[in-house]
Length: 120
Image 1: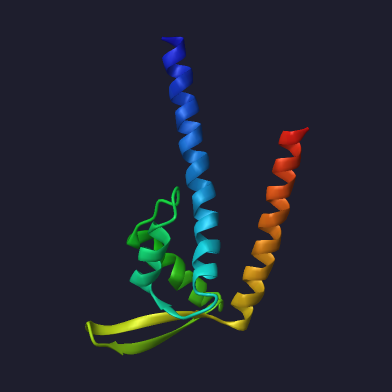
Image 2: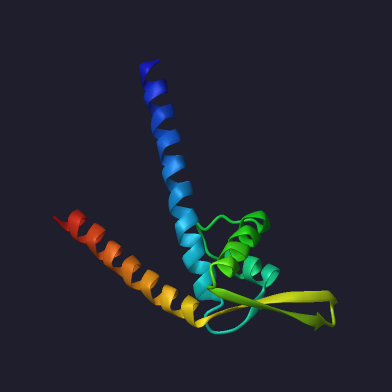
């Protein structure tokens, strides 16, 4: 019985930890995805779903995109589509470019630190 409780607590901790990690990584992935070209929301979803371990849903992407726009990191434009209704495209602003660079640098630093700790 004790083992079951410890396992449950460990699983709960791990689930919480991975959810928090994914949230931060998802923001970086979205910004990096639109860094070199403008993309519409569902296109971003489809592209990021291909990344193993990055579990995402449309419901997670759109609130992040809205917040990034409010923060001035992305701009939007509406364009007609031959495949249906007009689409909202997202692209990085200059501030967004700077933020991606900072986030990449921090990610590299953190990755290096965790790798060095593991190696002893």
